[in-house]
Amino acid sequence: TTETSVAAISQLRANERLSYRCVQLIGSGFIITPDKAKSLGLGRDPRLEAHIRTYRNGKDVTDEARGVMAIDLLGLAEREVRERFPAVYQHVLTCVKPERDQNKRESYRRFWWVFGEPRKDLRPALAGLSRFIASPATAKHRFFVFLSEEVLPDDALITIALEDAFHLGVLSSRIHVVYALAAGGTLEDRPRYNKSRCFDPFPFPSCDAAAQEHIRKIAEELDAHRKRVQSQNPGLTLTGMYNVLEKLRANEALNAKEKQIHDAGLVSVLRQLHDDLDAAVFAAYGWPPTLTDAEILERLVALNAE
Image 1 (spheres, rainbow, N blue to C red):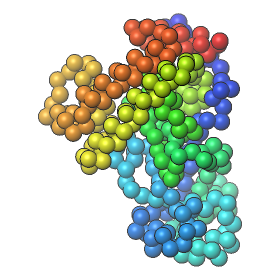
Image 2 (tube, rainbow, N blue to C red):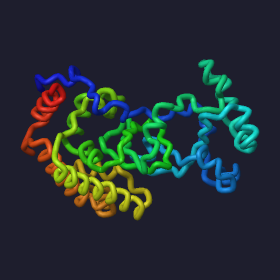
Image 3 (cartoon, rainbow, N blue to C red):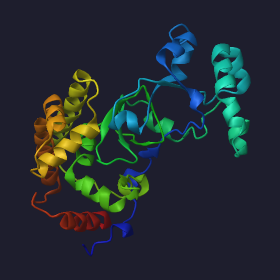
């Protein structure tokens, strides 16, 4: 439908070392409940705060957070875990090691108490941030959220080591979503966000401080709105809210369940926030908001080359 090839664009130095795949456990025994974490010593031994952390995967973001934690022992030798945290050691010994012993990869069997893919490069990128941006690697709808610094993100999330809501706003705009859908892949019938194709080459707008602040303000309100309605309505999911938003934009009638989601999630407010955000981001690029998807891609490819 367009002569523009998004596959030919180049990764940008400005985006280097910002976007990462997240940890891959390779062992379900690493995941524990908060009550189990307390029984292992969290809250009594302050050293464990760095090793038992709130854990989120893609479904926790798109649907409803499970409220689980994960045991993260990166940086500790087996002997150190056993000597410092014997209760934790016994848990991973009995709940993780048997599964890892059956794994074909030698490194997974040898270092059984550590995540299979601990993502050592991710950790310094997030150090010092109060929050970071995350998006499900595979999802029906492409949205971006802020997660707190205390959260350990799963491999089903793409993490972007930025805490400024200006960046959240640009990524949440129609301009970036159109680009991500064109540049990314698919898994079955769901779009997939590939960081090397969707984030690394994406050119952010070069705009003045006033334009950045305008986007920042709307993005903060967007993130706060979604978190607030979800906290007030257990069972309300982002997927459900964006399903309804999609129908509103298509002028399709809502069924009874969708009307409930609309009212609980204040989805018309969500729509207005996204509309305001889109207008602000188009203005930051200096582009008219009437551009077609093909015209957006054409301009982004040209801006990437520039």
